[in-house]
Length: 141
View 1 (tube, helix red, strand yellow):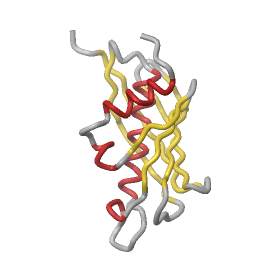
View 2 (cartoon, one colour):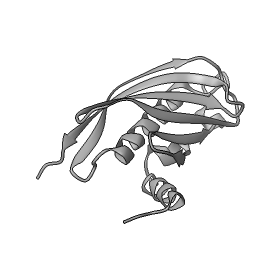
View 3 (cartoon, helix red, strand yellow):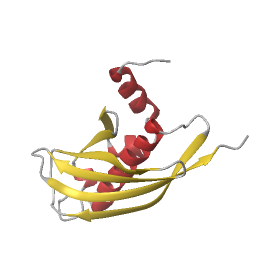
View 4 (cartoon, helix red, strand yellow):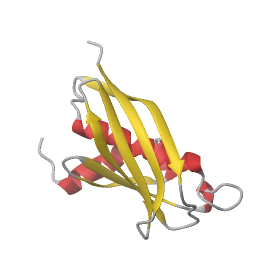
């Protein structure tokens, strides 16, 4: 089944309905040969009590975009992907607008994968730097 890029993005966002991605307002917006980009609106619902984006929401965005990238670029017909570890270094506070997470492979092994995930704001300022490791395991037969 050959889908256009816009059809693939629509399908990715459709399967996210009813999940944490929908709850947080995460939308997959672009992908290429070795990257995937998602965005999330920064609203008061995602703020810490002092009015800035909660780091946990940022980490959830990063893990979501990395996991989606693993699914997009690996053989998921015969494998399933799970996150192993995520780290997040938060560098800049955000109060409104959007944050964008771009996942790229650092390591693309058959069993383990490592992603670099850069989170930026509407002005392309670096908000967080994250690393996600995933594992792909054979589906039970």
